[in-house]
Structure formats: structure tokens, C-alpha cells
Image 1: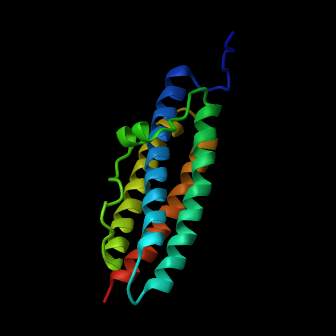
Image 2: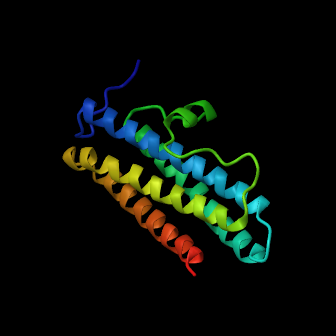
Amino acid sequence: MASTINIGIGDDDRAAIAAGLGKLLADTYTLYLTTHNFHWNVTGPMFNTLHAMFMTQYVELWNAVDPIAERIRSLGHPAPGSYAQFGQLASIADAPTTPPRALDMVAILVKGHEAVARTARAVFPVADRAGDEPTADLLTQRLSVHEQTAWMLRSLLEE
């Protein structure tokens, strides 16, 4: 028999927050996979720099997926976890089949981090309205990482 969840957030708000976090999880996992792909496939004069940077970034993204999924579970909803679900929920495209040039990889990752930041920011209003401080804290942490990473990657594209 399923237990009733009474954490001070109504069923509708928990469902809406979990749905938004599901999109954030899908975006995060998709960006993780793209970043890991680029780590494996980067070439050219910036190889050492980008190979190491991408590794730092994909490890951070990998470590982010579990807290997002566990927050969804804490709200009483199943966390999406298949490629099919992630493909339906993600706002960012999958990694290109053919590895792009190094700076094109950087540009793709900038757009990815900016998109994930927008996805995280979109969950804030319902979390705030519902008084869901743990989700707001998680979103704040994710926004900080994605905005800073996008800035650092954008800096590589400046001349």
C-alpha cells in the first residue's frame, strides 16, 4: 500500500516541480553525454586544454544527475531514466554523430549550459510558490555551475 506524502507541499505543486526537475535531469544527462563525447573526440592544438576541461565538466555533470533524480523521488514521483524519456524531455539536442571541430564543440557546450540554466530557472516560480526550499537550493546550485561554465567556455571563443 502506497503511503501518503505530507511534506507541506501539495500534490499538484509536487507534480509540477517533479515535472520541471525531470526536464532538468534530461538536459543535465544529455549535456553530460555530449561533454563526455567531446572529451573522447576532441582534436587539434587545444587538445590537452579541452580534453582536461571537458573531463572536469562531465564529472561535475555526472555528479549532478543523482541529486536531481533523488529530489524528484523525494517529491514522490518516479525519476525519468531512459534514453527515450530523456530524448522526449530534453531541450537540448543530442551530440552530433560526427565529432565537430574543437571550437565548434565549445560553442555547442556554451549553448547547452545556457539551455540547462534556462530549464533550471523555469522551475523556480513553482518551487518558490510552493515553499520548496530544497528544490530552490538545488536549482540555485545548478544555475551557478551552468552560468559559470557557459562564461568560461564563451571566453575560449573570444578573439
